[in-house]
Amino acid sequence: MALAAGISLFAGACDNSMKGDARPHAGVARAHRLPIHGIDVSKWQGTIDWSAVKAAGTKFAYIKSTEGGDHIDSKFYENWNNAARAGVPRGAYHFVFWCRPAEEQAEWFRRNVPADPNALPPVLDAEWNGFSKNCPKKLPREQALQMMQTILKAMEEHTGKRPIIYTDITFHEDVLEGAFNDYPYWIRSTAAEPHTRYKSRRYTFWQFTTTGRVPGIKGDVDRNAFYGSEDEWKTFMATHCEPRDINRLQRVGLCVK
Image (cartoon, rainbow, N blue to C red):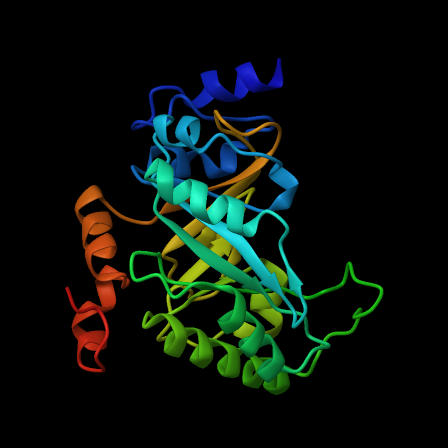
């Protein structure tokens, strides 16, 4: 019943009418009108029918790869390979564990994530680990930024692509306001437009719901939208760079078509 309501509320938006939301929120209605939609997944989505995901109009997928310095998502390689076979552009994301040295996390990512030239830019998922009994604390801002810089540098060296930073409202307020402005951002805002929740932050990707419905996936899945037009998406896919930053980044050897 909730699924049907979610689909009917936003049906006909671009090519995304096959998708829905178990709990649609009017505050993010504009996200449904953006033309380029994708998902992010981990082991919690179970076994995914990637052909059905592709047929539903999914333009990209970010797949959890690693966490901290000793954990790899149990579905990573399965999702990584099957998404590629189905023709869904995919990238890997690493979840930062603040109680593990950044150098160990960088090495863990390098060891476990293929440096696939066809993959999307990698993502560094930066949130507080408040859910973890083993790491409940918040680090000082400068220490957190230093750790992120170490991992971001390693990701770029490993993949040859400028990483994307994923974050939520709390971590952005505590740590990221005014920081890493030369990186693209993927931000979570599930009840309001991003500009009302993030101070002076331009985004490339917007995670607008965690209760999405997409054919090929059982239950909830995070849904995301790219900020721009289909032409801007083509530029992103051709260069693996934020389209608004290409001229600047080409000067440092990135975004080469």
